[in-house]
Length: 221
Image: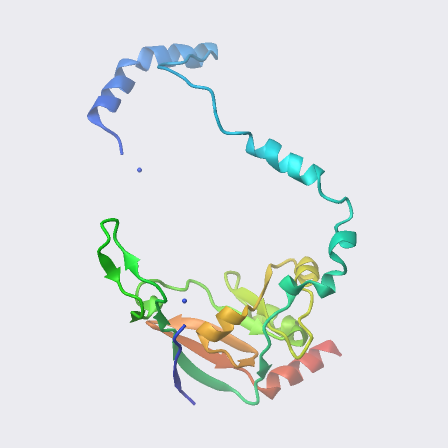
């Protein structure tokens, strides 16, 4: 069954440089042969602080045991996935992910290029190179089996069960992502398991019904 959903929400080289390189050819050859180096032109000390030193200093000030500071990982809101219902049957539908600007996009001179309220389809300009395989934690094994090497495997919550994406990534050896509310709304997602793929200027959502869960149970035996 097909349906359409409209979502409103989202190096150059100059002749002078070449002449300089050719003129300095013998000098470069001698330097390479002797292993020496030289400085040509003016130099200035680096004014910016060392980024690595800044990171190390910041880390040194953090608690050694992050669990004591942030509590059990299961309580981290950043790891809570958006919730989707359970697909009652196989279904394929299409979505056009329209986006509406909530601010003006203006040129440096102040001329408005795209006004607030302008609605467009991002898929007219970009292409999604991979599929999104979106599953509840209980269907992750199935999702990993059908996912292609370049696909994104995304966890959605089933009730209060979001799974632990970090632990599951470590166990599976594959990056596992978390479904965000914004993605859920933008893609028009309602149930899972679902595979999202681009076709032209539309997204094709393939939802998988009870037989997927039956296959999951059989594989677990």
